[in-house]
Length: 390
Length: 82
Image 1 (spheres, each protein chain N blue to C red):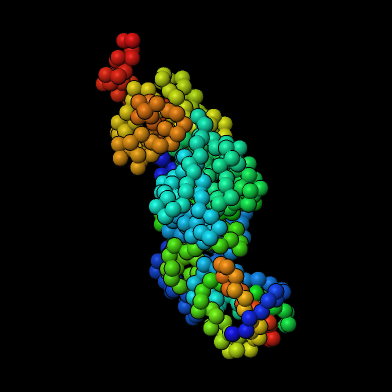
Image 2 (image 1 turned 30 degrees about the vertical axis):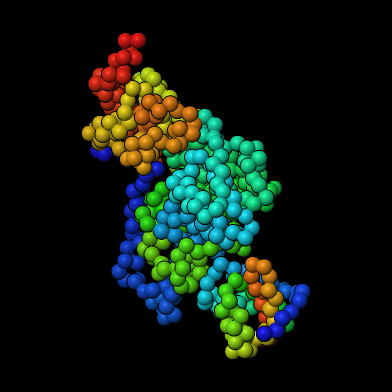
C-alpha cells in the first residue's frame, strides 16, 4: 500500500489542475498588477477573476474579498482590523475557548493594550452556547469571533444562532472558516457573518494564500500598510500565482462539494465503526452529528498520541494528534481541556481528516494497522498493564 | 476651507482607516456612478485629504462644496459637475 494521507486539516495536496493554472504566472505572466501597461493591467484582471471565484464559494460579492498570505493572517486582520478601527466605540472582545491560536493570540495581544477579552466556555462537545454569548456581550463589546468548525475535534458551531445574537446586540461577528470552506457549504449570508476567514491550505491550493471576507462598508484597519493593493486594505505586491491557485481551487471546490461531502462522510463513518469494533477504551471527541463530514477524532486510553503517530508513519499512514503547537510545547491541548477530557486521556488524542482522494480500501488498511499499533504500544505501556491488572 | 452643516449627500464613500492615495482614487470611481449635480460625501480620517480633495476637485473640474468635522472622521462633500 502506498502512503495513506489522512491529515488534510494540516495541509491538502495541491491539485494538478490548480498547479497547471498557476504555472504561467511564475514565468510568462510576471508583470506587476499595479502597473498601467497591459502586462500589468491584464494580470490585475486575472486577480479580479479569482476574487470572484473565491467570493462565489462563500456566497459573497467579489469586492468583499481581501487576499491574505494565510488563514492566520486573515484571522489577524479580522480581529486586529476591527479592534483598531473600533477603538473609539469599545474595548471588549469575545472569543471562544477553542479558537485557533491566530484568533486566540490576536485577542490576547489586545489584552496588553487595555482591552478586555472574554473567553467563552464550550460544552463537552465543543459547542458554544448562544445564550451564554448573549449574557457576555456588553455595551463596549466591539467584536465576537467564534470559529465555524474546530479542526481538532471537528465540531461545527451553530453560527447562524450565534450571529443572530450578535446582530440583535449590534456587535460585529467574525468566524474562522478555515476548517469548513470547501468541506461543507459555507454561505456568508446564510451564516449572517460580518467577517469570515479561509485558507488555501485546506482547499487544495498552495500554502501562503488565504482570504478574508468582510461585509461591505465595514471599517477595517489594515495590518500591512503599503500601496493601493486590495483597495488599500492590505499593502504589498500581490502573490499572483498563489491567488490564481486559490481561485482555481475555490472553483473546483464549488463544483465538487456535494459529491465530496457524501464520499468523505461514508469513509469517516466506516473508520469510526471499525475503531469502535476493534479497539477498547476509546473516547470520541467533538459532536457526534454536528461535525465535519471527513473528520474523525478520538482519544485512546493508555496510549501516547505522538508514539502512535510515529508508529502509523512506519506503516505509511499519516495522521495527527490534533494540536501540533500544544504537543511541541509538551502541553495538553487547550481544546481538549476546554471540553473536559482528563489530561492522561488527552495524551492519546488522534485526528484523521479525510479528503475526496481517499478510498475505502485505504480506510480498511488503516483500521488493521491502527489495531496492531495500539496493541503493540499497549504491550509496552505500564499504564495499560496496571489498568488491566486492576 | 469651507465648512458646511447638514449637507445632504446622494452617496457616501467611507474611506476611514484607508490610507493615501485611496482618497484620490476612489472618489473619481464613485462619481462615475452619480448623475451631474448629485453630491458625494467622502468620510476619511486622513488629514492630508483636507488639502488633497479640494485640489483634486479643481484639477478634475468637480465642485468641492465643503467639509464637516465629526468625532471620528472628516466629511468632505463633492458635487459632480461633469
